[in-house]
Length: 527
Image (cartoon, rainbow, N blue to C red; front, top):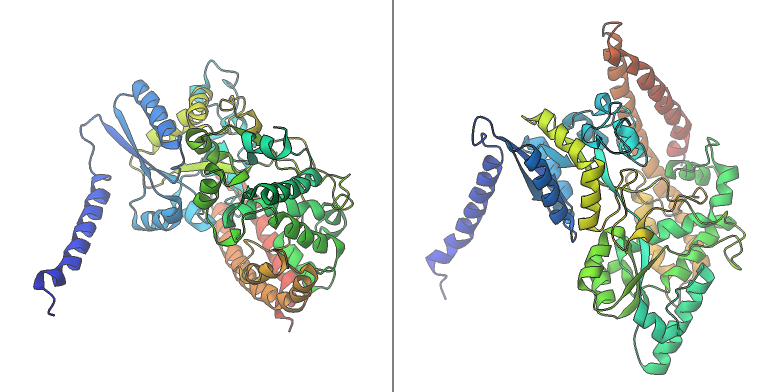
């Protein structure tokens, strides 16, 4: 049967229509202002969770009441495609005036975003009449914008602000918890959480139910393991930190393993794998293949008693849950834990925070002053109070009230320094991490064999660590070249130029990168 001629052209016509629509959108959001006095700004972000777009709309409306000549529109992009979208827009010169920095690397941020450092030592004008009225803008944020500076460690410049702080919490169905345990009081410690898993299993056997203790998924399980596993390496950090700075970075752990100083038979690393095994037994079977929406749906359908998720999910649980949700910090092993206590120092502080809603002003924006002014407004105490209330999220601005019924979402400032994770996630090119994730299934589940998994890691992981180190060294050389150029350029400036002082910071960073290169090269070259 012959294909009708019109069908041959249908796909081409659809593609052409999509292309023309996209071209019109790009052109229209860079078109000239509607009037001589009108300023149009665009804000691109990935924050589509419940309440966020409404919070942005409210903040935009508040700013426009103060500045009627300014028109601001938001461009929300799904988080799964945001990184590719942002890179394309930045490279193509069509990015919104204010663009979110999710998963952007230092090179893109430094090239395309306006440095805010010169503005951060002055007060935020929109904080007038509040306790933050005379406080430097940077000091109105709970972390002093340290997290933003960490995005560009080579230059040390700050190119944006974060409006919120994320935390992860254990949410629980009060009614189901009472049906299983006879009480709405959740487990008080990690041993109690493991005991609760056994109670759920007994309840399922008694009633025929198929409840899961904690709804899990691939991305959120990584957050969970990143919280719990470092509890087992806290004491090791005290003796093994190469720079004696109470930290062991992935590249430093790779060095320790390749030097033969630690391996997965070392008690702290082996206990981390055992903790992973025990915790995975409480999660949804097959959780590594599941996504966020799967875990939330499991919880909302009351097929799990608990859900480990982010503070950003709280609004959707309130909106869609047909039951009462409680909130609690995830119980982590304490020093008195009968199994995992000997290697831990205690619960980990959340003071470092986890920045969210990271926004910066584009160098290419035609209205950089107005865009910067809107960032001031967004991060002022009055605006953040309303933003937090509407979005049910925790603000990063000091003194902003937590969202209604969400006081337990606020970061816990008391606690110990963390240890380190043992899975090399986010390290270099990801070779070691991919190997770990490909084989971790052998350590979890009812038949998981932690000893066999540790033996495999000891035997095969070093090869992948050397591959990652070789990639890391390439990045170090690029950093050194960039820092050389920065320091040389600043030395050519006039002696009274304030930015000339930055050459010392760049020179120090250049020396640090050179030392790292010299230290790790023999390990990468070893057979």
